[in-house]
Length: 540
Image (cartoon, rainbow, N blue to C red):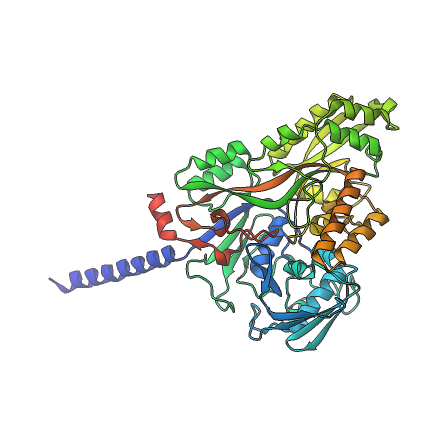
């Protein structure tokens, strides 16, 4: 064999070795890609909807973490104690937790995170507004919350206090004066596309309205399963044909949760794709504006509630059940709460008591349904048909979710009705009662009702302030009764999460019956296993 041939063979061996190494590396790199409706806000002081919560639950850590029953477990906080009067909560932090920039997480960061959330007053701030009097740093690893009054479900609400890096935020503020000369914009512009967390994943790329790509944090303070995805990509797509194409090409591991029953059935017929259905802790409401004619009239609202066809609505959503009052079937709900059913005679009796009964032709009730959720159109058409039997003109309007959010921020732009899913931010009904009906949630998509009812506010606050669990739940039942008497919404159904996923190469805890029943915790990527070599087999 001559020298030239030997050199060529040696080069070929080197190239083949490199290719084999590259292929092996590629196969070992697990990717998790899931579809979502947008917008997604990764700033813990701004985001509150589901995609935002899922992103934050991967990018950030919290003091406590929910187990599969929704109970709080130690996390960044190793332990805690509460004062005898229920007003002071002291948390002892573990040392050595590092932010993504390598700096250590301390009590100062926890205080900063709470203060920033309350000052900005957006997103999940309503959970703590009026409850937290002061946050104090006792020492480097001890933080103390002083509450205005006893706060029964406080531990569970801390699932929503995502801890941000104080130094990194303050190094990236814009001098807008929005929150004062020293705080500027409080880092809101920077946190629109960057994270300042310590979570198991960190932002790699984030072209807004397209996708959020997160990569595994190699220095995370907890062990992460080696089969957990190296990258988690949240893709802004819900169009059924696109989802189906991506799933069949193995370019998507988990579908969006808004797929219609027909789309889910089509997805389940793809080899290697299974359906997952599990309780969502989420309600589906038709959220009614109580300040805008004609829905400002309680008899008009009750007429709509009696006319709606609940049984047909439930059949449109696999796994769903009839709503039992204004909350999901989670801790504290009232199984004996009054519920409406379709009764056109009662509906007409109520309508005839309305001050608008003789002027129905002068009003058109507008209903915004979310364009990214196709099945909402079916509900919109169903209620339009139901209302026509009473002589009520109802106009469904297909609206992008971002526009729904923007419209609900002002009474002047809020429609008569918003088609709305609302999950419990923590696993007690007070999450939905407060989030949906307390005055602190107006100007958000959570309360298109604009109730602004001081009596209801006090009832909710009193219930939440009750430390004794049984007494607190009894007070929840009274709140539920009061809300039902106001009829501020049509309580459609208790929703189930329905996804299609690549079961052949993705081991997803939620699909296996180990779901974490807290809003935004169904896709914590460090608990999900991906086996890329099995994906390769499916592609052959």
